[in-house]
Image 1 (cartoon, rainbow, N blue to C red):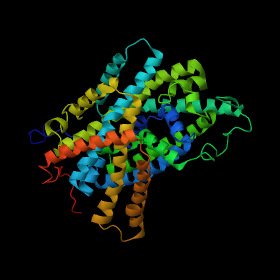
Image 2: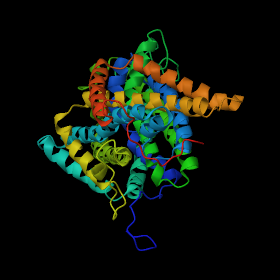
Image 3: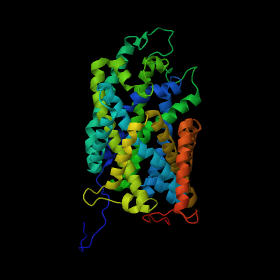
Image 4: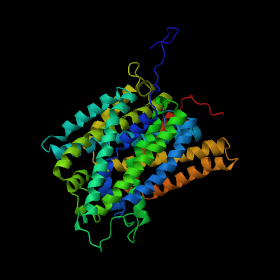
Length: 465
């Protein structure tokens, strides 16, 4: 590329995305049909109150989405939580947030590969799983090399069909319940869950700790909303469009999850192990029990496409985070900070993420979801703290009630709600997440010459105003 004077110019990300492009990418990343996969695990952890766990998770997510909106207006960068903490708290804190978020984003494409392989093995049990891993990873990588606008257009129809599938499924469940039947047979007046009651949300068996534990798992279901901030440098009118898109994406997904799982919880009222062969991968069994084998086959075939759409969006998000960290020089600038002059994408990062996604062939779903929860909660925590640090403490935006509400009260409530999720995080997630953080601290010590200087950062934003 050359500029008007004929001298070479540096390739940059291009602003091609509007509000609905962003929402579509977000919903594709979140993948609404993931509620079929997580239902068994969350039903077990929440003591059969899945919709309430979704409500707990949604409250934390919506409060945090407002904090993302504030930080995007100040720092419209692809670095997301990494950049916000770096600029608002300290460069070293920013690096550690980025390092932890990297764990979340880098593993998200892998989850979708694992899910797609589960569905394909249900349809083609004789094919070696490595065949599917390689084909799916190559496809996901190839679509991302085409650019963010192509990703959005590719995902649009897939998201619409997902919503139709969920609507049809929910109607089938409702019809069975209306006729007086659940998965155990006829519904008697003595049974715990009745149609149009509050029991699936709260009853004598409810434990707040169990609900929060379920909510920590469901953070995985919402991780697409925060990754949208990594598209800041490719969004038209970023400061207005992206905050609105992030909030709407989380809200739309949350409403879908809560309504659908309300009926599912009534239909599957008891221990999920009595209904599903594998509580960590319940979609095939749920589809069979509700819609029969033909419905299961059609939806599973389409589910392969939906998880790939989610994987493609996740792939786009992590490659942008890696680009922001590479541009800063905290990781290799020539590789990670590279933008292809032809496709205007961080092409090296897209290829690297594709190589990492191949390790899905060795991983199981439980472990990967646990690791993602650690990275997601770290990002959510520090985005809320970044708002308080940047606006309230550094900028002194506490002179009137509106500012105190926006820059102290709401982010503090967001922090408290996320902290509650931390208290119930799975031991596996915490253990491996802390190991990952330790490696990050060692690398940061090397990069900062024994912490004698701050981590390097890109000087795109002026902190003086």
